Image 1 (cartoon, rainbow, N blue to C red):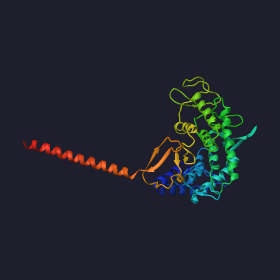
Image 2 (image 1 turned 90 degrees about the vertical axis):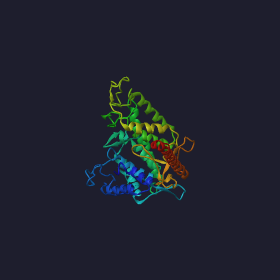
Image 3 (image 1 turned 30 degrees about the horizontal axis):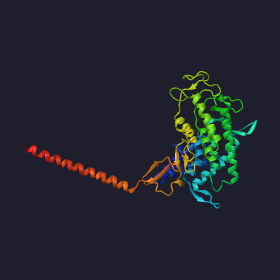
Image 4 (image 1 turned 45 degrees about the vertical axis):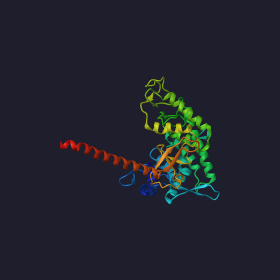
Length: 376
């Protein structure tokens, strides 16, 4: 639960004005970290009935990625902001949220750097995100996560650490991009050995690298990241589009021949996952949307790419009160949160009473007309 739902549960507590959901997350987190290894990694499989781990191993890939991701994103969502000595904004977090940030930093400075990065022999500035010593498409979310973490101002995040973390994020992004550019289709493989490219050479329409490209563009404003996104989109259109939707590829190094459903060559995967629409295309769209349309300064994205507004951006509104969201395609403001105006409730009440009065009067008139007829 803490790995997949902690961000959503914290948001529920914020918008409903109750502590029930975030207290559940805090309790699970405090329980889980009692089983962490010396490097901060926690077991990836748990018995939900007993609360005990079913293995002692963990990582940053499948089964653990959401937990690591939310160690940063929950504090980003829920912490308020205070002014630092240099008038910059610092996160003001509860003790539990501070512990989440500390564990995130511990993992980034420790096992991520030592066990989840493989440097390219001919160019050490290219770092492949890896799990179990192999490149994994799934962990291409790490460049974006580490870049996002480097932008966060909290008491333990020094200028030097922020700079080294952002440099690592860009190196890992170059590693993912190198895998994409090396493939004949321009799309990255699922899981391969970085030297001989043996392994699962399929492309599953995954969003992780596009997510990282979107975050890096938001943080830097550099058009090179839009260029990368456009190249990937063109490759998807060329090799994955069919008459009935989009499919994955069996082998990114052996593209399908023609536009038929079977595809020839390496062939296509007869499947279009829901995350392709919900995440991959959404991040591609946002990559080319106005920079502040869904800004990382105001929103935190869940692991399923749903943007949630940060607590520090609610501007003191009573979150438990009814509110509406008005979308305005204005130059500077795209989302306006406001309470329902009091006069609207008055108008609705008046209309309801008026309708009631009219209905009652109509019934009385009907009786007056029918009564003489019944006497005759």
